[in-house]
Image (tube, rainbow, N blue to C red; front, top):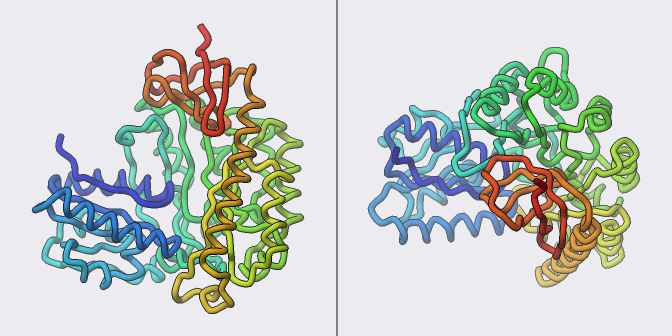
Length: 414
């Protein structure tokens, strides 16, 4: 079946939603459409969205081009004014088959701050993937000074646990061995629901009710809001992957306070130490912002040192990018070249840490989820290059024979 050409920019939640868009747009008969699901986490992300739109118009002349996602939600008129763009849809409208099919309205973007429910979409599979994403919540009620995303995604709203379990069960029945729980602020899951269930409660519910699920992984989590049940599950349930990616953003207390984050450096250190005590093999990643307004050399050095001090293996580094309408955009700015230089130093520190960790895995065995015959991901999320073909979707015990800064090399057992 011919399907729309959907281009995903940004986060794992966007990746999930792009699959919904593909399914709904196909059902709406939009098989010739080109749909760009944009990101707005930084100013650079918006610039890249515009660049992508122009390239897609050159590559697909004559096909209807639809722009949606967070950047479109925040500035619909700017995208509608681009000559390459035919239609603009907001974050609510992009998942609605009727809105997708409504070609009479070139701009459809509602006030997302008034949304109080999240539509439930059940997907049977994910195009070209061996792992699946399941949305558990939408939106965010926090107001970090650098972040525009709450205004693109709306307030926190959670999906019912039984509906999430139903999704997971359907994906497992369709051959998926790994499911990733995703959302905008997953540690706020359940805060708006009866009985206020937490993320740990939901994860246990999934693993108990879908015993055939072999791997459950979490998207980025907030170190200020990890509940006790999630820690207990980490200790007791090997099917919950011992790979935690933390939304740290910085590791200097002064910078964290200006960011209006809810954790301190000591809080992050406690979370990491507790997880490692419960499950020693736990591997950590982190989101970090370089060159936040007013950040001094000494404060940056504190964040840089945390990469080694805390053993952070997977870094997502962003040079600070001012977003109009956020408090941080009005603060005293670090010069652009300095932001880029600090980001480069963080990335270099992350590469060194990753190489050291990967090297330490040589000689050990790991379970690899095979993605395309000769590549896959270990339970610790390490990319693994195999020395022979294995059917995609299989989880196979693999001996690690070598490593570089980017991946492990392994020989499947048997």
